Image (cartoon, protein in one colour):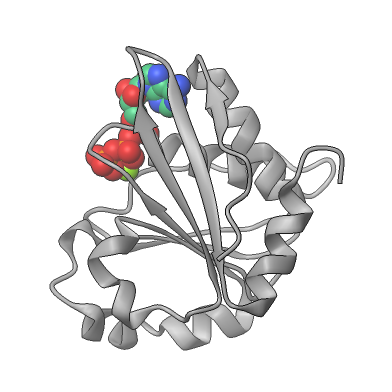
Length: 159
Ligand SMILES: Nc1ncnc2c1ncn2[C@@H]1O[C@H](COP(=O)(O)OP(=O)(O)OP(=O)(O)O)[C@@H](O)[C@H]1O
Ligand SMILES: [Mg+2]
């Protein structure tokens, strides 16, 4: 376990900026689990990630909640698979969706990751959001697994 310093933000824009920093560092094989209550800003964090992952000169991709379609894919430097476990019944659904194939061909970002934690690889970043006010949030990143510790290092400001 290697908790990075918590990130405190005061606005949607600052959550997007944190997401962009993640998206800039993102590499194939990364698995990022997003945890936190309804409306804390998990999907907004993914918007930032997709924006930071955008290849130079390419237009913004549209990020929407994959609650109903289960998986959204975004092009960029790295292919991003955006999942939402809110509607998944179990981790077995993740296998059926082809989680292994996704990890082999891109980066996986999954909302409500705590609901299917047992079906996710140990090597992952878990980013937990907490509301501390109407528009203020605290984002805490924890790395589990040896690769994820390196990913976490790549996220530190100034690295
Ligand atoms: N600092 C902030 N960061 C992110 N969202 C914020 C912030 N402050 C206010 N909000 C608002 O909170 C809401 C977050 O919505 P979003 O869909 O991103 O949350 P979510 O965690 O994905 O929810 P769900 O659990 O339904 O998937 C939006 O309405 C957004 O405008
Ligand atoms: Mg969401």
